[in-house]
Length: 203
Image (cartoon, rainbow, N blue to C red; front, side, top):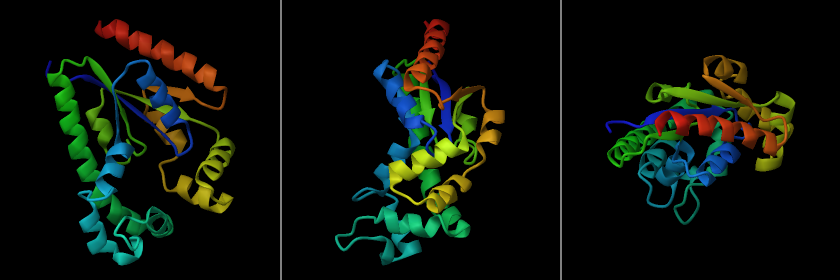
């Protein structure tokens, strides 16, 4: 098999992407996660650390040379130009790793996989996908979740949400829209149904 069928999973911050992909993995599906790749690139000895140091300086690093993610977040979520600079460093590296893993999955005979990317449409990584699923939630619920998860003020949570493409636009570009305002059980039931359809298609 040359290439597995790729289902892109996206959504806004706090829309339930991680819970969805965790569930899909529990069901035995292969999930490639751009956030996991990004964290690996910016972890100790990560490939992205040197260009980040050269660009943003020692202020975004701890005394023991680790990336101070909170300090970096304060810069990039208050300055759009700086955010684009960081994205210019990290996104090509993430995409390179993802493409390699998709290729490897094809060689391993994997029929389909999920590609979880928060900025799927913004980065153009939807070009790697055969279809896309968007996890969506009302803004009030989204703000509440982001505040609680990241221990942020309402203003900080809104600033992070506004950095992303509006959910309405992601919805309009996606093949499937999955609402996550309801119970986790209801969302899982829908994901199970969609996954069964994929398995049937490729079995």
